[in-house]
Amino acid sequence: MTDPTAPLVRMTPLLPILSRFVFAAVLLPYFWASAITKLGSGIFGIFSPALGAYAQIFPRATEAAGYNLDNLNLFHWAVVTAGMWAEFILPLMIVVGLLTRLSALGMIGFVVLQSLTDLYGHRAIEHPETLGAWFDRAPDALILDQRAFWITLLVTLVVLGGGALSLDRLFFRNAPSARPADPQPAP
Image 1 (tube, helix red, strand yellow):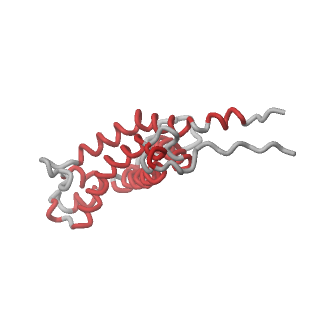
Image 2 (cartoon, one colour):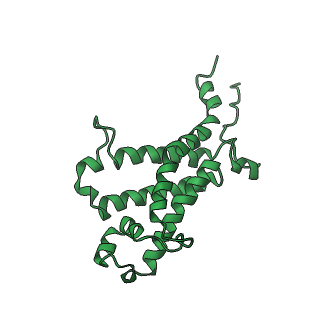
Image 3 (cartoon, rainbow, N blue to C red):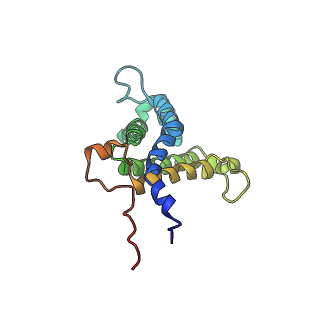
C-alpha cells in the first residue's frame, strides 16, 4: 500500500527554500525600504537614526518631546537603533539562510512589535479597516490579514530551518535536516 503523505515528505525540503525566496521577493524590499527611512545623515547615520525613525517607533513619545530628539533618552535611542539594524540584518540573514531559525524567530518578534506599534502608537486600532478581521471576506487588512501571512511564512522557517541551499547547511553540516526521516515500514 502506498503512503498518501509520500509526496508531502518529498516536498518538505523545498519549503524552506521556497519560503526564503518568497521572503526575499516580498518582505526583504519592504523591510529594507523601511530601514533606509530610519538612517540618519552621513556615514555614521547607522548610529544616529533620523527623526522619522523615532516618530515611527515611538510616535507618542516623539510628539510629547516636541519632535526634539534631545528630549528623548538613551532607551529611545537604543530601541530605535536596534530596530533599524534589525530591519537590515535579520532579513538578510533569512535570505542567505544564516542562523535561519533564530533570524526568523527574531523577525516574528519584530513583526509583533511593529504591529503593536501600528495599533497603539499610531492608533490604527481606532480604524477597523486597518486592523481588519479574520474569517471575513476581505483579505487585505494591513494588520491581522497581512501580518498573519508574514508570521506563517516565518514560522515555516523556524520549524524547518533554512533548507539545503543555505549558509546554515554550509557552516553547520550537522544541522538538523528539514527532511523528516524515512518512515519505517509497518511489520
